[in-house]
Amino acid sequence: MLAAIIQARMGSTRLPGKVMKNILGKPMLWHMIYRLKWSKFIKKIIIATTQKKEDDVIVEFATANGLDSFRGSEEDVLDRYYQAAKKFGVDPIVRLTADCPLIDPKLVDKIIEHYLKNRDKFDYVRSGPTFPDGIVETEVFSFNALEKAWREAKWASEREHVTPYIWKNPDKFRIYTVENDRDLSHIRLCVDDERDFYVVSEVFRSLYKEGGIFYLDDILNFLEKNPRLLEINKQIVRNEGYIKSLLSDKLTR
Image (cartoon, rainbow, N blue to C red; front, side, top):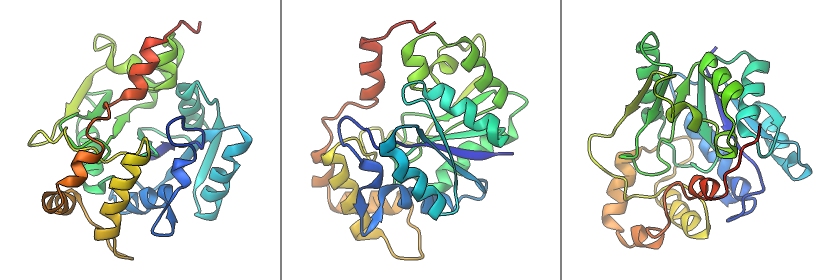
């Protein structure tokens, strides 16, 4: 059964509680899930959070919105994904992170469709860095690939960030990256700190209509008319969290 597993926690170091911060009266996580419900492939969404007391609110949110949830390790997110996928019988897994409230369901479907049409050729399909940061950020992989990574990954950075062991080992996994038609890597639409949150909130304030959906092209048109927004968070390094993990990396087993 294909399903999306979204990792979410309240303990972000740069913007604590960000996944439940309100945009237009709704939590950021609500907006992400609402947009994913426009996907033609994703029919089941599982929220994977931690066992910490502060994350009770995420489990309560999932329950209130008719979603399954799973609680696992805070630091070993690879184990959290593996145990969640195993419990709910997920295969293939669509991996998403809760800091992407502007995620485009059409682009998510593009990544999923490429995997489904080529699952005899690839174990792992992901979106490439030519997409705006935060607009798709999708990885699709088989349970077998996840289990292999879970068994073999030894570095803390590989456990915390779930998939590095897969994409660092093309000799062990069949990998494909879907790139955008043009390089839009300079556009940042994920949420790591207050600057990101402001930019994303401005997009929602201008484009969101209850009961409707807007896509990347709509966002690009808006940003073209409001280029100042791109200046606000352009200094933030992409994948900064993973880079920090590498600087303090250590063997875990």
